[in-house]
Image (tube, rainbow, N blue to C red):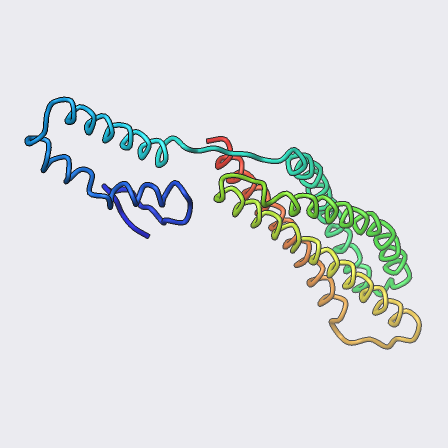
Length: 233
């Protein structure tokens, strides 16, 4: 990492290397040292050279903001965002029903609680299907990452994809806890065997996963806003 005339240059890409060579070639110093000892035509030529190189430096630092986003990435992002938003909305609805299940358990209405859990598990199949849809779109986005320009936009896209990948994992946890809840309630109803507070603990964990799903989806949206800023500027 170097600083030239107040500009930070990391030297990683071709433009930065050319800029560094320009500054380190001592063109400015040589021009100042010799301009008073050479003829007018040569001075004009040297001045022109400095102007051209200076213009390139300015362009490379301030104006070269080329961006490119593959069509496949844009389409996958659009579909994936819709699926993720749907997942977040569904998880909120399920959380409301879990509160009802908790109340039924406290009232020892185990049969009704089990029926509601079974109903939720059937509806949860929809979430599992959405998780698969989302994973497909994330795969398409990941395959297009290397084509995205500039690099800063690629970094934001990677963070967004990581957020949605974590969302899928949380969704699978959500489903597993729901299965455990059914087993616990079934045990309480069938033979009275259960661990005290198990239902409340499982419902708490399910709600935590639902909160994480919403949070990760919001993080995804934030990173994609950053991505759009970096590819449109």
